[in-house]
Image (cartoon, rainbow, N blue to C red):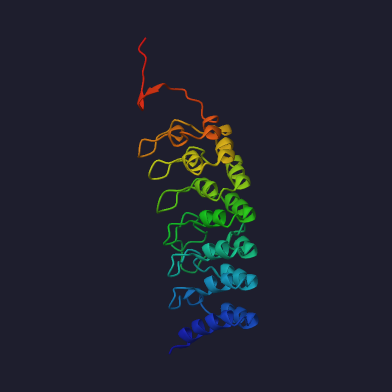
Length: 255
C-alpha cells in the first residue's frame, strides 16, 4: 500500500471517528486528489464530513479545492447530503461566496457547486430542501441562483409541485413569491393546480389561482383543473367556467 493511499484511507477514518485535528493535518499535507478519494460507497471525505456536520473539516476541504460535484453511490453530492441532513452551516460553506483558490489541476476542474445535478432519484438539491420544508436552505440555494422551477428527473415535478403535494400552504406561497412558475407542467402535463385540485385542497388551489394559475390548461389525459374539480363545490367556486361545453366538447361560436 502506497503512502498516498494510506493517507487517503486515514483521512476517511479520521473524519468517521471525528478526530478533527488529525483530519485537518492530513488535508493540509496531501495533494488535492488524495483529499477526494472515494470509498466503497463512493463517498469522498467531503461527503463524510458533511454527513457528520464537521464544518471546519468541510471548510478545509473546500479551500483545498476538492471537486464539489462528485457523487456517491446514490448520486448525491456533498450538498445533497447537507440538504438531506439539514446541515445549514455545511451548506453555507459549500455554497461559498468567496473565490476559491486556483485548482492545481487547471481550468477543467470545477470550482463551483453545480446546483442542477440530480441524484439517482432525480432530485436536485432544491427538491430535497423543499421536501424537508427547510426555508433557510431553500433561501440559501435561491440566493446562489438555483433554478426555482427545476424539474426532477422522474416525473418532472418542480419544487412548487412538491410543496403542493406536501400540502404546505406557507411553502407554496413562499415559492410563488420568489418567482416559481405557477403553471409549470410535469412530464404528464399536470400543473401545480392539477395536483391541488386532485387532492381536493381548496386553500392551496385558491393560492395558485390568486397567483394567476391557468384553470384551463390540459394534462396528457386531456383534463383541466376544472374537470378534476367536477362535483366539488368548494373547488368549482374557485374555477370559473369561461368556456361552454356540451358532453365534454368545447362549443365554439363563430361570428
